[in-house]
Image (cartoon, rainbow, N blue to C red; front, side):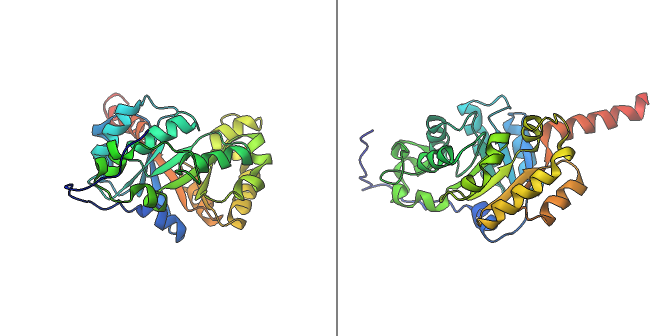
Length: 265
């Protein structure tokens, strides 16, 4: 769209710094919380708990663009990085989520080098990419108040892609070689199902370990999910940098169960 870049008379603001992107580049372990409830209130309560990042799960959680925006606003004052996972690795959805102000994306079901390359193009403006220009009227560019947003946005955008199928595992070497990807997330649930072991991620630990080694060899950050401490520690020993160690709905269910058990046995 043909927006101008005239900023005269506007008070300028700076491009927000992506602390998560810097941390994984430096190899600092980042502990995450998976947010599936789509509740801005729960997100804000959780944002001050000490997690380094929070996954806004638009693939399986009941989020729409307005709910994602509400969550981004709710957690903005806190020292935590929101990571948005759109419903699909679709350039249109990516464009919309970036314009909401998300700076870190986790893109599901990226199975080939070509798909990975398309994701890189989707988060970059032309001539390097295909991201549509909407920042002058969007939260991402603070409605035109961030000077040179289109030039500088890529410096703070962090692109994470998910490997979670047999096809993606077969192509892990090529996917990991794609420039412009900051990290690769191994999705244990979908991957175990794809490999014939639904609900049994423990059965595919050798494949996960191999994937970690390949990703590490290409200099990309490694991520995954594990809600038990021994697996979390194993993943970090294998070279992971960002691991989701808990989920909002899981924590709530377990807390409710433990609480009522005091009274009903």
